Length: 565
Image 1 (cartoon, rainbow, N blue to C red):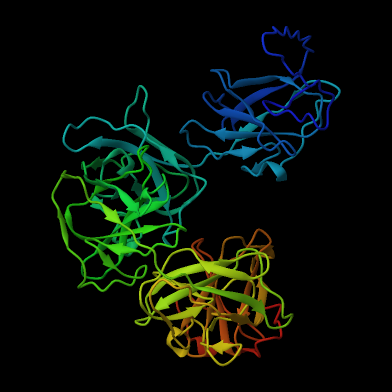
Image 2 (tube, rainbow, N blue to C red):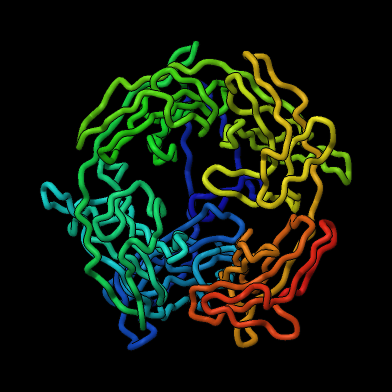
């Protein structure tokens, strides 16, 4: 039986099942066939230089876990052999070795969705696949320990755009070998970026360049950081970081049955003034304990919670409260000193009431299946927990709730509103009817509250949901589709309600639009002129414009509107 890489499919190829008997010695002989090979050279598109240390990989469109790779030598040559005689290998550059080039798939395709790659056929013989890589921008520098001045290896380096979106294809980790602490982020297009060093897993405080200590790069306006601008495929190699060792907090999270299983509990640090969640971790240590590292010295509230055990959240020390809904005046404030190792911060979580109900579609009367979720909010409007439906639309909350009054809605708002999925309109639970309108974004206090008392389950918190209108269109530049452009849905008074990005074909859609009047405009970071939808001619919007100069798009809550370009 031939295998693709390390992946074999005994169901589709002849195989012999071997059943050893105790005490027997089984001798297995293999007669190996000469496999095919794919080889080639990797050069620079400009100048033709041979490129060393480029990682070339072979993927497979069916056996998606199969992968064979080689690293180019000083002459730019690579070779992968021992291949099965098939016709759908996909060859791609997985890693350009920190050099200033864009990774790509064979035939100059963008990297690296193997399913969309060009197939390479080795059924009748070996194949040659060459690459000529396009030059890119390059961002790099050195990451060191602020105390010892020594380089730090294995620090994840992240690149974000001006909208605080992670440039997902370009992560890099600092070198842990001969050049300890060195990093290079390659394949960077022209644009404006912000660099983030995520050192907490190694006990260092995370930093945004330059020297801005924070848990997440978007904890404030990203423009407060220093932008790194790439123009004409620049190489900017002096973006250095000196990371400070952080403090740590550790302890155990238990319930009536003992220490929670590994990964079943969580600790979260909250700002004592704003109550905002700052960072956290699960109880991932082998003994079921947790250890949160890279903690910034300051005063915190500490919250504990479980995943799906029906337990109430707790604020240190022994204050029961709904998730994200503890008052900032409750709980013991904990001062963390620089590089302090704070131990024995333990919690005992108690059972609370679970909430049950059913989510149905008003048009069909059937349950909405597939993990559709409902959010719960405390009487002050703060997020308090969630539940997701099973295949029949019935749900039960993952956590337990303490005594109190709660709202229910199909729209989530933890730190910010999340658009309702599935094309449904935002709604709230009401006690005497199937559908509670609440606007977009949803005003939860327009709903009715239900009461939790003790640990008895709360039943019958049902949501009967209704689909909304869908607005859709296409964004182009010079007659070609424009991918990753932002399209904004504005209210009838010009406020931004939602934002989506165009796909590879330039298409976008806003599903679940409630009845009302709207405007639509574009926003992009590529230097193109932004436009406000208007008939017969769109209005320029650079950077802003009067939304009332656009054409109103009306929604009746059920009829789709297409062709908004």
